[in-house]
Image (cartoon, rainbow, N blue to C red; front, side, top):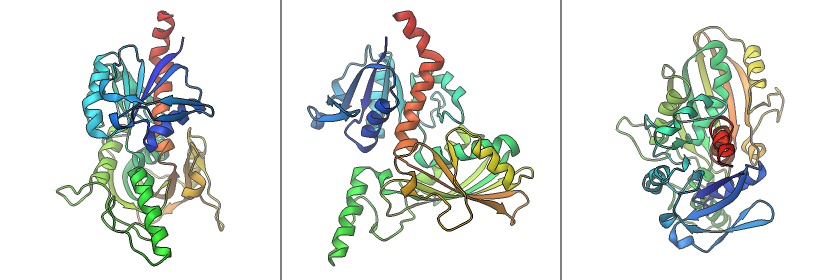
Length: 345
């Protein structure tokens, strides 16, 4: 007997990717339900190569009897409906930012801290981290295991796909108009995104950091180690899909680039693509549509006692969102729910 799974926010970029990923990985679901706002009710969304699902209304959906729900409908909507689903016995894996720092909600990257899933029962909610945090901690975990990380300085180069379909549409529209000497005013972003870079993602915090930068700090501490110091600068760039990060890591003890390379190459979810030649590194183009976190440009940082530099690239809609959520569901099945499912059958 398989699960009944719901996907909330099924008409959005991440929701569609969740449905695609569930089908590709053959998650053991007997029934999958697509949920969205009332304005999308009746629309059809793809599930796998041949199937389509008719969208139902999230606001009126009864989660009783639904085993797992993958949520990506926006933070305000999750804040209202995820606790309702949890109270009705459904385990919610939420992709929004709303529950990530809740002490009773596990924040999980399966390659990094799968044991944290054990705490899901407090609220029947598991949080999916921020896309930029996910790919960074996947790359940091095998290094932290062998040398203990002291400090991380990261600059991100984040695709417009992280801002949803509206972000991708704005990049496309502005680019097209500029080629015919026309101008399109920014709506989704604070400045023109076409042929530009914007050092501003999410709202500004009192200390001058943006909320995206704050997320990377606090989420890394919650997932990996509260003693790691993190500072981030997050930049939106004119790329449709795929986030890139320049990561500077300072360790508590000596670590060679060879040790780091070997640890990363053996780590789950990581692909080391690092040839010191033209084109011997990963870019968002190669990462798009792929599950892995790619590590390139690995080298020693000689400005600190024990430092390394690396370039980290991943598909933000897959590993940064949908895939990580489905992997959490797979771990939930393997560790906790499978026994209950067999008992029920």
